[in-house]
Length: 81
Image (tube, rainbow, N blue to C red; front, top):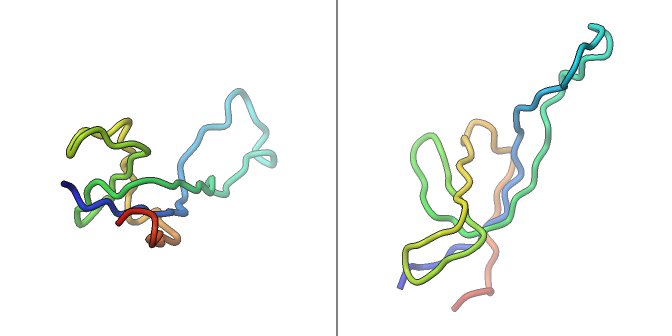
């Protein structure tokens, strides 16, 4: 069976501000997101998390997050044994 690694991730995301905007009304701060899930995969540039696992290797809606956007991440201990 796959070793389950529950994780919380705080990360900055891109977004759009629909419609026409005056330059003074354009927000320049990135959106701060918080996600909780199972760590599925990790590469030098990204991590992938998912909210659910079926069997040993089928995950629902994997979320790919660029490591360069991650502000904080923490593994959650004691959930799965």
